Amino acid sequence: MSAPLRKSSWQLLLLGLNARLRGPDRRLEALSWIGDERIAISGVVTPDSVFMLSERGVSHIVNCRSSGQVWLARDLAIERALFGSDHVAHASLRDFGHRQNHRRWAPAAIFAVQALEDPDAKVLIHCQKGRHRSVMVAYAVLRLRGYSAAESAALILDHRRGAELLPAYVESVERWLDDRRQAVDPQTLGEGSR
Image 1 (cartoon, rainbow, N blue to C red):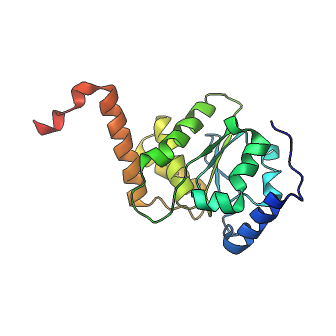
Image 2 (image 1 turned 90 degrees about the vertical axis):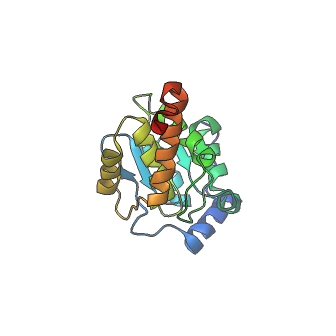
Image 3 (image 1 turned 90 degrees about the horizontal axis):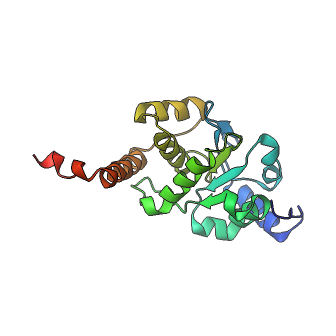
């Protein structure tokens, strides 16, 4: 890990201000571990909680907040400073409820799956409130790990209070998975046109 930051740094002050202004819904703030999958979902990491993540077993982070949010709050920079750039991925997403471009989130989902190949790894996936964007990426991770759509949804909704799997977000993941399968098996291309 990189050298730890001092709690009084200006970046932590900005993160704290952002958490107070638009911060996590206090009812949803805690980490929610998704079954036995070593995946946690939460809202934005606060100045106090960022230092406790490793104590909670978190080894990798996927930050699903938009580029503007992480630029203002500096939370991504703090996470990379504490955990190392190779242990933090960014899925720059805005939460508008519409389909999400896979180029923004798929590399982060793959990063999480690869991290979980280490049996000691635990991945935190977070956004602003831990309700939509992080839920979508966690859903993608579970799907990549072999769970069905129904199993993935049930795991998340059973373990993350307040989580919502928005239909457009699920469609984004499922279309991307279909495209991946067709790219791997070119013979499936055109089967639907018979």
